[in-house]
Amino acid sequence: MIKEFKPLTELKEELISFLQQHENILERDLRFIASPYRICPLGAHIDHQGGPVLGMTINAYTALAFIPVSVPRVRLSSMNYPGTVDFDVKEIGPPVMDDWGRYAKGAAKVLTDLAPLRHGFIGAVSGTLPSSGLSSSASAGLAYLYGLSRVNELDFSPNEFIELDRRLENGYLGLKNGILDQATIINGKRENLLLINTITGGVVSYPKPIDSEKLRIIVVNSGYRRELISSGFNTRVEECRMAAKLIGELSGMETAEVLSDIPEEVYKSHQHNLPEQLRRRADHYYSEVDCVGRGVEFWSEGDWSSLGELMNRSCMSSINNYESGSLSLARLHQIISDDSDVYGSRFSGGGYGGCVIGFVKPNFGERNASKILNEYMINFPEVRESASIYFAETDDGIRFE
Image (cartoon, rainbow, N blue to C red; front, side):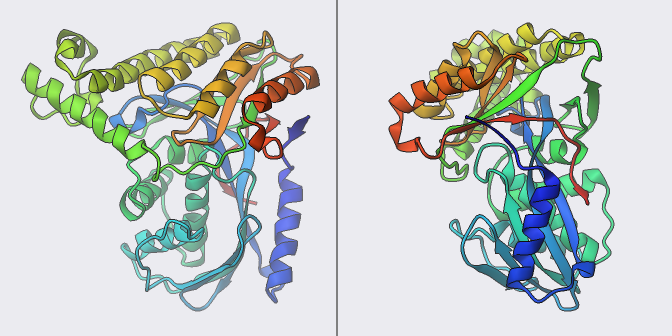
């Protein structure tokens, strides 16, 4: 009932074999990139407002195997989606929503905006759980950016790669998210929690306490696929900005653009003047900032019970104040939280499908998983074949293997 994510070595072998079945290539020419997914225990939906966030990379990945070619062209196959993506990096059109290759095209576009690309690659890509709310999109975008940069001998710093992927998602794809995903995937470190300053890009790593009680991570796949741009994600971002602008006008801070520009005491003095919907969005922001600050303390102390309580509080704010997620995710979170072997949980991502992540006790096992899934499927029988529970481990950030 509880699954383990496929080991990276096995994923690499399968992907290379898949690529060789589709392309006549020599293995000695192959390059391989492991771009991990990320979880966000606290700090949900506030990176686009300049709020601090917490992130961790896990052992689920976008994997990219490829060989360089001497022409500026990319040809890709996928183990998750049908068809082949084939394009000239100098002729990138606008994104098409049902085109799984749009992240590769976006990567080529933002790089060609900086310098002409002389080389492309032939490759294959595989995702552990695509469209899951675990930032598989940023994971894929960064893999393509790393690959195209390597074959064209372009050298970028970690912060420059974060900016490139931000341009890919914000500019090319039109998604108004912040830098939580990119910053976590690039800076991920095994057994560490990252505190990310989304204004400066600064990252501080907090190691898991050595003498703490063992903590396990579960990823519960709701069985529903997730798409941010077609959900209310961008609308929520604009509502937060509207709240910041209105508070700024009321308080004499006319230059305020995002909620991080407004001190909490200023917000509290004027919150009653906001329309109800905008007030709830802002309430979520300030509550989540508080959760992040306290969450770092609880992590450093190994106080998993208190950290889990914050995760539950955070998730309820996402449901009630930010109004994100879906009926299925809200119900799944409730079922998981009712388990006494779960410290806390929250759903991951802002779309209508995806996953719930949980911090659980060491004795969480098959009995717990069976009870959770059975109760969930009573409510949502259509996902009986696709809902699942995984144990996850922390991992390092994106790298060539």
